[in-house]
Image (cartoon, rainbow, N blue to C red; front, side, top):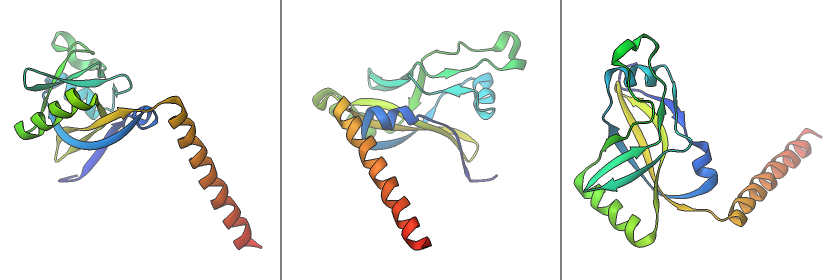
Length: 154
């Protein structure tokens, strides 16, 4: 698979809990056993988030399971990992996080041309009534499609 994109994991809960305003593609600095675990799809993005510290973006709470054949070279599953972004992107993100109270949430992790990449979303939190509205809209859309199918059948 040369040049293709293979999605390893998605954070579906993020779309439920947040409005995604902007998306960024970031590289991740990993150890050898971490990339092997990622290629085997042994990671979890559920409670992870990113933060800007001293002009650098760090990913917290992303769980990458230890590699089975890693023996003493294995990594800490929840260690902080540095993300690679352009300086202009980092300054733009920093401004929005500080002024508008937005959060950096990892949306998905994928392999692109053999390298692990992370899709980072600049998100605003949803209130509980927003979540209910989203669910109601989805149910209404499903019902309309069901009705259309029934009408087209008969």
